[in-house]
View 1: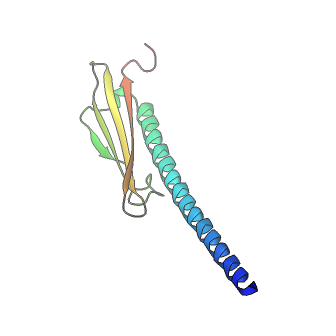
View 2: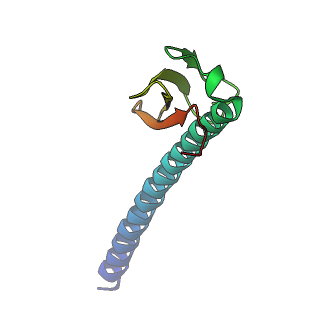
View 3: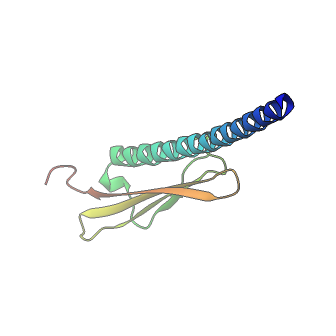
Length: 124
């Protein structure tokens, strides 16, 4: 009887440790995904701010430019692109920054930020 109780205790402990390990590994994946998404968003926001600082007149419509690999550090398989196009009026330009990366397992993820920039700056 004592042997059966000991075997049952070992089995229960093995199952519990297995479940704890699975939860830990899943949590590590979630943390890594979150770090990648946060990094990609920061890169895109930084690029938008950089373009705002350059000014409206230095944003040629129709321009497509890559985001530098230096800016994409920390993003596995990271790629980025900036697109500038005409907005709804002659005084607006639409700026889109897209950043993508590859998660473990090969799934490509992306963040895309869009902003309108005016010839009149922030004032109406």
